[in-house]
Image (cartoon, rainbow, N blue to C red; front, side, top):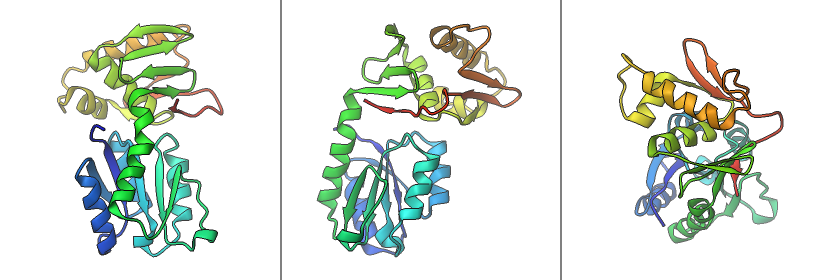
Length: 227
């Protein structure tokens, strides 16, 4: 499978944690965090595809941290490494692993967790995007995306309900921090509205946050995910 961007949450002083992170680094891009709070900040700044919560290295069951991650980052799958015992391990993570956990087992778990997403659709409320074909699907109608349109749409879909400032979007989509002219961003936002909004001149979903940026608002009770 292609390299994924993973967020590894754990204590750096743990030898087991270092071994597990190193095992993942053989195939994936790893970003390290030492707490749930730091993990949330990192995940909001990067396009993270999965989170590995090594609660065992933090000397805690990690249930509270896992709940915090799930509440704040509902669209990112979580692998929870639990210290056990097995019959007392409970978690809301997508995958629960009870120690001992080897690097090979963790790599295979990540591969199984991400494999469906590499070919399937990214769903956000009433909208769906094919990540591999770069196609946006709204009310059964497919619209082909350019690479920049697809990247911007993916960022919005992975951060619903969050205010994304213009600087962040320019950096992530166009790889620049130059803010002298953001008309390209405005044009792309207008284009997305033409596809997803019933009335693009009076947007319901993709809201402008005055002097800040944009926010994709979903209908109440809907959450993004993959099919």
